[in-house]
Image (cartoon, rainbow, N blue to C red; front, side, top):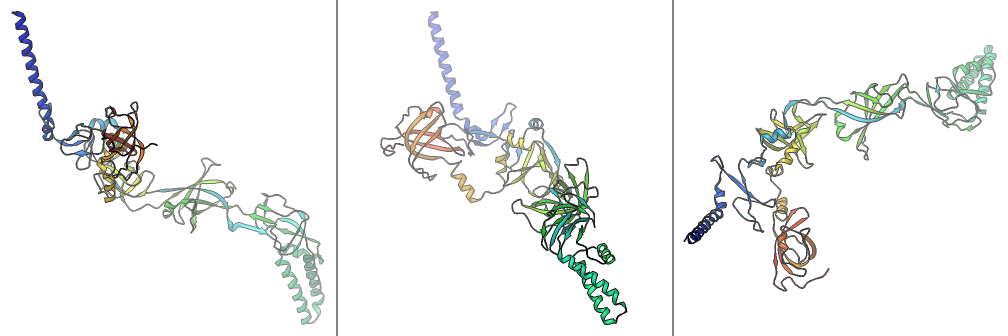
Length: 522
């Protein structure tokens, strides 16, 4: 009797459990429909479902519940969820996560940008202070007084002694004319005038040959020609080049010495193309030189060259510097800082607030606590710390100046950014044929790699992608998709591009014999 009662009780319990399981299963089958309207939270509040997203992370959403090609349910996205892109294009980040990321904001402000232009340059000789010693007559170098390059010489200092038959002849003519002029002082005026004209012509000839007044005076006093005369330095400076060699013969016009006055030097700086509009003659330049750490030189821009170097995309700028102590030696490198004139007041934000992707510049504006709106901005002039905003942000609006890239990483910022600014038709067409599209194909299985979850298919042409027939590898979205498939089997399959270059099979099944055409080898 007891055994019969126990058996009956067990049967009753099983029946009750079966009925409860059916009820639960029936309730779960209706869950997507209920979720479309909302989900009851633990506190009795209903959360609104915004949309459903692809369970594999593909860029595909749906306003209603649906399944992907593998039969997986799309995942609901609820209103008010942290780290989501709102329908208005803003990005929501929880307050806790904002604090964890170290997000800091600063109000956009109106100010005049004062910018410094920095450039690299080199010390060069002042071209206006270079003199060349080039005799105007033919002769020989008898003796060198200055015989090394780099030697400091003074104006009027003898450089070398020269012998020249022409020079000796000119001296004799002058000496004879001077003596004749003295002898004919009692003669008639015509004779005196003729002799005086001969003496003046000889004297002019010597002066034209750069014979000094002291040498001419000595010649007048001695009354006889000298075999050699000294050629003297025309300026005070440094011998930059010396071609004269003792005993050599030179022709009229040969450059024997080049002497540069280094009391004033040039700094030639190469200014970047984008900074040329900020500089002008008269601006003060602050110059530092590696050879003299801590020493600062100042000069003024005297000339902006009218040409641009096509290879370096720079424009030369000339700065003049006094060099009384000779510290500034030609060839030294110099660093210049040029203060550009302040611009008109404009809305500015810190440089760190701008996310620059190359094609577009974005600033995150805080519109509420934990809510950020990405805005495309148009940039203007820059300073060392700020950038001018021509369009996109108004003065006083708080912008994110730190952790903005982390917000990009922690949230779906890219989806929010894509919400503002209409895409060109060509871009939309491209999206439709790539990430959001499911493509269909037929072919034969070449090989299956269960370990890596990949399959090699020799497929027929894919019309939607304009692919020719070929053999290529695909990724199986689920390893179970390859169950029962063997090399050589004819199949038809669906696939998507999960990310650039990664093609994922979402559905595959055997095809009737001969459906994919004759099997082709490699």
